[in-house]
Image (tube, rainbow, N blue to C red; front, side, top):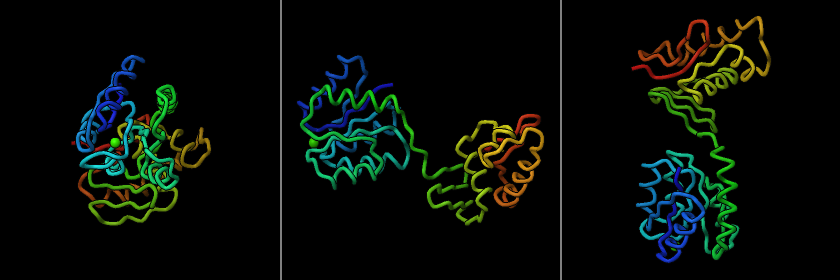
Length: 223
Ligand code: CA
């Protein structure tokens, strides 16, 4: 997958793109914030090198808007070695930063590290149809209406929702939600699923939790 460079200074941008290409990467270059954001949302990049000072839309805004939709790793470039800038970038969801001017070898080393790591951050808000799970706030709504869940019910829902479309066996669910192995008695999972369904599915026309006979459960939107 390619790397996206968002850098408005023509020489710096061309130099970075050329350097990455010579190092064997495919690299796209955007020269302002809106173009960078559009490309980042449209295409799947392995990594984004994002300058902070950009015309039309600054790097902070690009990063913030990107994070509403995608977890692509971001290495941001800042002109000042300022702790406020660094903290701001990391809080907005940047994965690493580099202070200008930097040696190209340094950039390359950071890129390699980030690529090895991959996107590790979990989505903070998971959506499935009209169900919304705010993972940090532990808040669940469906069609905008608040649903109160117990801690275990939330853990179960979170697990199924973040692996949506994937069948989870009873023993997988048991080990991840209860941190136990239920080799023989996975009834506890069935009971918990029934309780969860009563809250998030039964009152609604569109069902999201599905039983896969002989295998387990999965969450998905079935048209
Ligand atoms: Ca700049």
